Length: 157
Image (cartoon, rainbow, N blue to C red; front, side, top):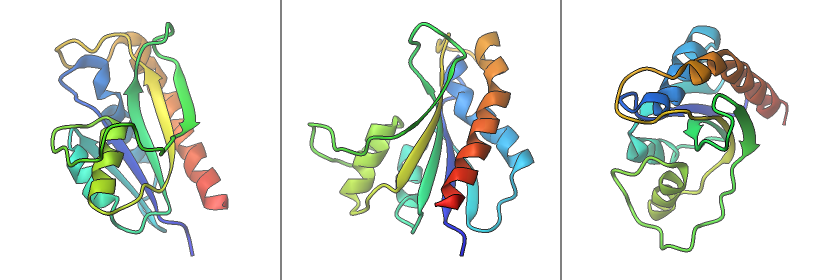
């Protein structure tokens, strides 16, 4: 039986490069078949929706999101998420979308996060406005390939 893998794009399309996750998911839908335990969903800014969906029996999560600029906008990073709870108490946050808030909400609901691979892209501009910067837009194909690689790796485990 294939592992149950959720691919989740998160971000606000009205804040420039923060729309990276939804844009990558648009391309992922065109390339990956949602079969054999695989589901790809653009959660946008619906962190609570993602937390509730994670209550289902997922073996793994591939989370696609914009990450802070570390000096190289458009650079794609792939890493495994740290699920250690933050110092603040877990609480439900219907408006929080960052991964730590989603996982805290999930814990408050009685769930536990699955193994999580993050495909993130350093942002150039998250000011008000629609559309990705040139550097982040150019990183979308690399991010789609990284999602495909993460899914293939998770299916091997």
